[in-house]
Figure (spheres, one colour):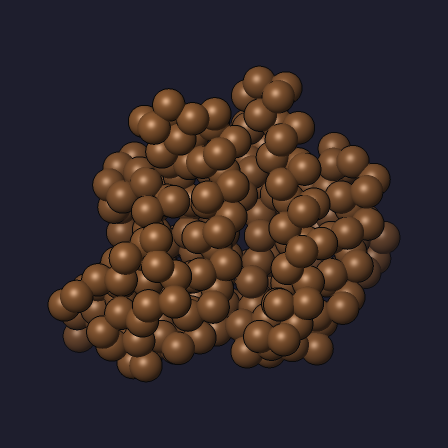
Length: 251
């Protein structure tokens, strides 16, 4: 199969109109900094190129039958990075929302954010809330961006909320189950991911969707995120189609 050139975003890979039976894809977008460093560029240059790659994948995802796309943009652990990189990333998130709002609406994309917003600056939180409201009626693709997200943090917050609701008499004891817990996660209302992809050659999940991805299929690719193309996505989706998912049962 001929793969699309990552530097020519207008290309369509072979099989672009196919539906591979994958409803929800989640991506750990790793390798932006290394991509830039390998070229002698500042790390933020890699993050900017990575943002362009998100735009391309968002544009083609519905053509592959994908209806939900969740991407890991900034983890609760990423605050450990240099102040320059963190501030640059926050500025990049704000510019992405401001510049892509019209395009996302025109493409029928609904934008959602998951993660703890308390530590984010006021302007970014306003932008996030504004575009969520603006795109709430769109349904061609639900794009969920994880910012200041950590799976353990999400689970702890959901457990605390469920405990508060139980103490307040809002949840009876017999309803203290998986469904009640999941309804208090950041991802409430979203289906669990069918497929989780991590780029850059790392083979760990890095605290990304631990509850939701309990039965997800995983793909680890050595490709750095700025070089990840629709063509490689098609190859991964085809491999997914060849897997037998039993969810603990037998066939």
